[in-house]
Length: 64
Image 1: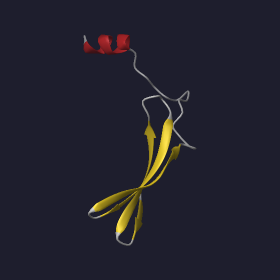
Image 2 (image 1 turned 120 degrees about the vertical axis):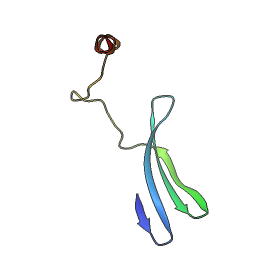
Image 3 (image 1 turned 180 degrees about the horizontal axis):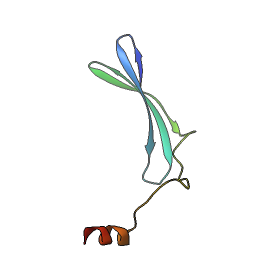
């Protein structure tokens, strides 16, 4: 988020339904909101070896 006189810029990375990522930049000035940029993401989250996931078996074991 970038603050500027009279409004706020939000820089967001979105995951689309087709598993791709897009970057958007939105300018929020009361009362209107403008989409300033929409493009395929250059930087986006990637799974790493440090990413943890919980399998359904682990969830079932934890609930008993």
